[in-house]
Length: 120
Length: 107
Image (cartoon, rainbow over all chains, first blue to last red):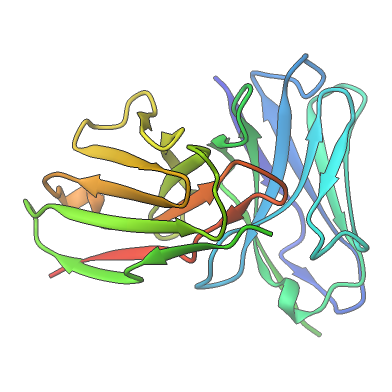
C-alpha cells in the first residue's frame, strides 16, 4: 500500500527550528521520477506549498520561506525531511507531505498531516 | 506568483442540487489546473487534474472545465458526502499556488 505519514513535534518555541519528517511506504523518493512536496495549512486558512524534492535530489522552494527552509531525503529513500528555522507564531499550521503525480505538478497522494503550534 | 481566486467563498446548497465553483488565475495556465476536496481534519483529496480529467475513483457527478484563466468545478447532483471545502491549484509554474477555498455547506 502506498502511503505517506508525517511525524514531528506538536509544539515548537519561537525562534527554534521545526523539523518534520515524512515516512514513505510502498514507494521510494530515490526511484526515477518520484517527487515529494511539503504543503502547510494554517488553522482555518488555505493551503500553501513550501518545498519540493525530486528523486535526483533537486530541490525547489517557495520564496515566502526560502531563506528559512530546507528539504532533504535520507539515504534509504524512505524519508523526506523539512526543516524550518527561526519559527514564529505565523508558522502555526498543519504540515502535509504529498507525492506529486508523474509528469504533472499536482499532488495525487497526501499524508494525514501533522498539526504544529508555535508558541512560547 | 500566479494568484488563484475562487468564487464564491461559501455556497449553501441542498442534496440533489447542482453546484458550480469558479477559479480564476491571474495569468494564463493553459489547462494546468487541479481541484481538491478537503473535509474537516483530513488531508485534501485530488478530484480533477488537467482542468477536466477525473482522478480514478472520483464519482462522475464531478466535472471540470476551463482553459487559460477561468475554470469551473461542477457537481451535478449533490450527495451528503460532497459537503466539504474545495480548492483549486495551478500546476503551471513555481510556486504552486492554491485558491482560498470554497466551503460547500448544507442548506
